[in-house]
Image: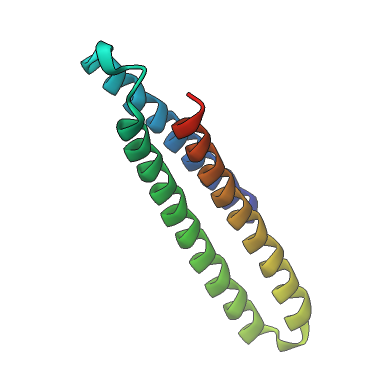
Length: 111
């Protein structure tokens, strides 16, 4: 079940990056003269992508934390293992959000 959530998060992240690219392409098609100087539209697209990735990550973190504490309530003896696994999952989610931010910054300044 945890792997399904992670794969769903990765899918959302890929879709948001695709959305960012499509917004940039649409902005370039609307005004071809400004296609080389469309930093504003790239910044808006990057902000949207980062916001969606952060929102999806926050939802994933909330679900993960809630389920971990439900598990701890059911089995208090396994608290250390459950909490360790939860923190590892939270680190992976946060890393994916940071990657989305880095890609968004690269879209603004490199493309």
